[in-house]
Length: 128
Image 1 (cartoon, rainbow, N blue to C red):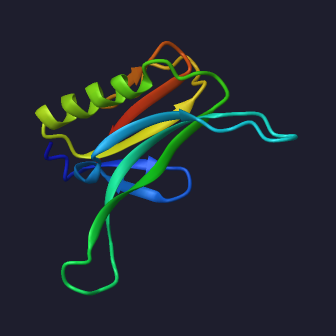
Image 2 (cartoon, rainbow, N blue to C red; image 1 turned 135 degrees about the vertical axis):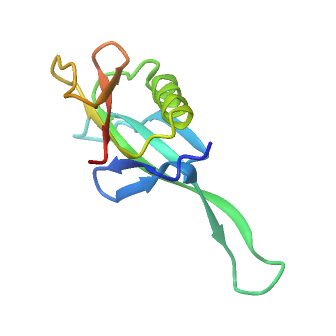
């Protein structure tokens, strides 16, 4: 994909450029004493690591959480992948925002809304 002008908003890390994403991960956190388990939808980014010596660099991955939800997110990864493919084909420029348990919303003019049946919604807001 060539999503150099599409960004994904994370709740803690700011914005991640779409062409940096190499995967979409959905997983459940472990349940800890006094804390319920949650579901996370992450984008996966490549990250070089090493000691600074030629030939000793390796590639690992970083997970950046897009949204946390108490309900299983179902096919949210597929919905996000489909949205990114549509944005790539349209040569779009803007920000993808993710929300858990969204209100019924059709999106404002120019916005594209993708949902997986109510638990997670992906909204694309084009740049002005």
